[in-house]
Length: 606
Ligand code: SF4
Image (cartoon, rainbow, N blue to C red; front, side, top):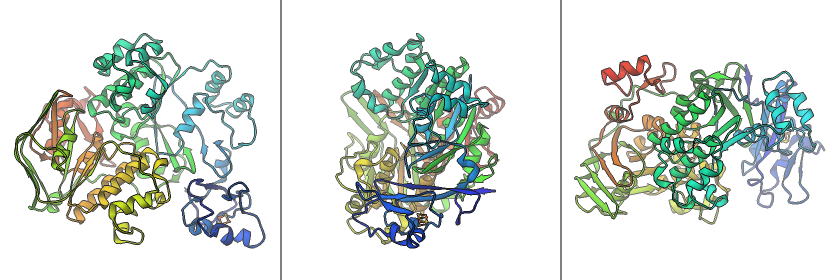
């Protein structure tokens, strides 16, 4: 079996040395990497300082892969990996010396939805830029100007040859739904309708508007749209272009479960019309539902990414969860992710009530909210599900004392810490100081660091400026900040947003452990059903007419709540027999029909 990381290099490996330019701070450290490198010690120039700013430059030819500099660097700025030598021949692109590199490429397939499954920072943007023709692959020769003749020669005899021929002769038509939809208003001024009209090459705008629920927002300026509306507009624009290759980068963000299913159908329809479609999506239940095939992307985020061979959806997702790629015989994660379906959570929830409320009402000029009485117990994690704009956030803001109900009483015998849905990047300083402010004490080498920050993988972010954090990093910092505050109830509004699949599962498992072991309680609003399935003990379901009126019933046991919620969606779940993860049954398929008839929408109990 090949291992991604080897303790010692061998003749059969090649070196990957990557430096995080932001974390490398030669003015603040004692240049330990240079001092302790054994090659430098014997007179070699394996690590030297860059003349312009003093940052480290590592020679991959001289480096022996000992890993000493990785341990010595106080800011975790260096990654050294020994990869199988053969893989070096599969290098597709490298940006610069000691920077990210991508090995192998996925192939678009005509008439199919191909899902890309992997962590943030593992190369998906590089892939889409290469496959759409925005970046020419350099095969690691970052100093050379590669021609398309060389590119075609490299892909000779592969499925990708034709794809690159089209790029080379300028006939490749690509349509991309970008990841950061909130940037759209910065590049387009006008209404949603005007934007759609501009790109409606296939004359499908009207149908897409209907399918994606965009009718009410057509006359609004794009800078007035909510995140979910912008996301669906971006999907509609991408789907209405006439292209050979379509790429949807995280199409579920900001959307509720109803809207996610609608987006999935639009994407599947493109494939049904014979188009080649690729999707990156971190809502694993959704990716499973909409993909025909999967490529697993593995490696080290920010350092290197490897694309697996093409796999069936179920097998690809299971291999990802297993952390093992059988076709390459590579283990890329030490531990497999498991979904424990035999939880005995009631043992850990105490009878002590930490919050309770009577029937509540709250009215705004154009929106009315009604909530049935309920309570939260110590050790309990309450999941909140439902469409957008039904009052879920207002509910937790009322619990946190930030809004007052018009009628009804809320009794809270505990302190609440709230992580809001929308995250601010306004803080001027590094992550370390932000965490210090939240905890009001030194965090390094503290017990709280051991309990929260290390398991959440925060240490690597301490030196980063909050303004430079990616969406996923900012989300983790926001969750960690809320957990650091002295509180008994943690109310987390959409903690999965911007996190990759691996971080979502890790966060869900960590929160379960932390909340239970510390005798705390939590309320979690999220649209990722896998996260809710993993984390919640009980559920409150919101229903109603979005932006007009919303109501919530009393809390239900998770199994009953999921069953009721899935029934509203007319979707049935089964559990994967190997991993225990929830999977959506094919609509109208044998299991779907059987479960609907028996009323077991959640999954068939054994
Ligand atoms: Fe030097 Fe390479 Fe060892 Fe780092 S891993 S200390 S660069 S030999």
